[in-house]
Amino acid sequence: MLITDSCNLSDGASMVVYEFENRIPVIGDTSYVSHSASVVGKVTIGEECFIAPGASIKGDYGEIRIGNGTSVQDNVIIHARPDEMTVIGNNVTLGHGCIIHNAIVKDEAVIGMGAIVSDYSTVGEWAIVGEGAVVRARFEVPDGKIVVGVPAKVIGDIQDYHREELSRFKTIYRDLSGRYPTGLKKLRD
Image 1 (cartoon, rainbow, N blue to C red):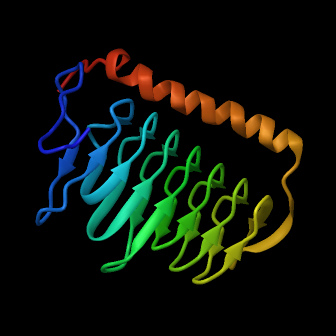
Image 2: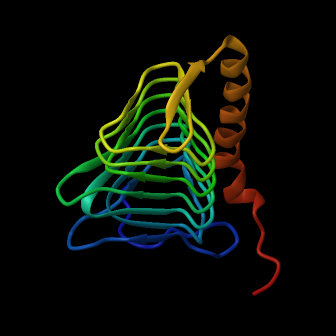
């Protein structure tokens, strides 16, 4: 769905989605964007994404691309450098309060709460960045690895039980993207 104005939700609230200098967000029809999230400029959000309250996704002078089934949780910040791009893959989980800046996060990756993924870094498929970790500029987290610390360092491989548990959580957020538009009811101003 091409967004050119605020989209109404069932409770009468609206998404905070802005065109900026002819840069217009494109948001999948089956995605949910909270009324207190902010989506600005050249941003593409795929299908079945859940964009939680307080998220800030700014394509004001860079570009943001978010794949299908991705969860952008509360107070996440996503931005890019001028004329550059941040790419978030399919079925990614961006934990509460993390920051992704001018980086690539590949399919199925999980970025823990409060983590930072900095300029020109890459987080591989099914990789996990631990809570509070800092993935420094130009660092590459290999596919299927777990990194923690400041700066982030590889501490091991993800296991089958990680995939199973994380897949379950990813399904919950994809499900919420469909439930929030009709299930969320404003009680007071």
